[in-house]
Image 1 (spheres, helix red, strand yellow):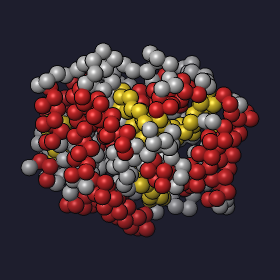
Image 2 (tube, one colour):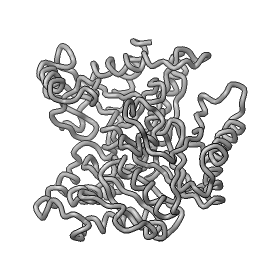
Image 3 (tube, one colour):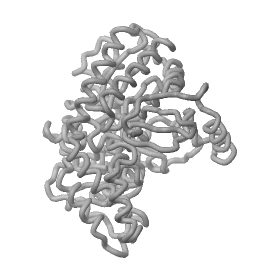
Image 4 (cartoon, helix red, strand yellow):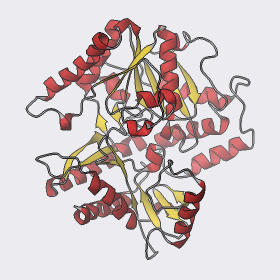
Length: 450
């Protein structure tokens, strides 16, 4: 069975002949701006494995960039979508009510770790839509125009979310951008100023939030602070819990809503169903959660979860959309929650995370180019540098390693504001044998490319 296979390359080169031909077709018909550096053309997939059109087996440590926590083509999701498809594909929720939307909303409301107990849920299609709707909901509820986001943040590619996103490589030539988006400093502990303690550095970052009130927008004009519990594109950087506590206190003081962008961190990736469970345990739960990616195992779906009070303060007609809460997607979403519970994937996330982190830390001790290993659960970033002393970002080795790993049947992806981090987003159904095989390929790539 494909889901139990190990990485194996049978062609002389990667891509093989069939894949190379399809990649050439892609160049001729798909815009160049939709980039792809990978020599893999998928034919079928199961679990954590991809078989390409030439019969090569790739271990997928990208997982659709965090979409496939329950793995590729999980049979229970396949069956759920098939069953729903025989009833109806779609009924716009503004027009007709359907059971799947209600059931999934109720299930998410029951487990989402927001500040208030009484919750409501809306569905959209993508992470960017979830983030944009979360901001709209915050503005509608508070009647305030502005938001605060952070350095290193990624929130999407719509006009609003491009303005919220820190790395402007994602927004070249797309301006002017919406007003009222102001940026504070996110704590990047590995790159704190030399000689500064972690506590002082976090305090400095907290002050940067308060500085927004002096330099950009009065506090009573700020609707929300939007924060990723663990920055994705920014380099897999966890938000220190003391920082989150301080930001929560600032929000409470000024009547500002705290939005957790859990697009990439949700559905077991960080060792909790939602990463903001760590926040709630520490007494600093968010007011709103925006989530997507692994919510429906690859069927487009996203969600925004907030208190009834917040949701019902939003002006009528300002949220919603044609495909939000599509019936096929909701069927998949319901089944994802069941699979995660039945297969103990939260526990598996922690197991994979512990094993992978231990292995990456051994590599850090062995190789001067491995600067930092960090993350939560099975969401791990490995930062590469030219050397440990200077910490100079080393994007070149990451670029080379991506190709070297692919030649041996392992798919990995970069991240980070300098492009020098490799992110670990393997499906949580990956076997121990597959994990070990991937770690061996990964270390060999370091040795080969350093």
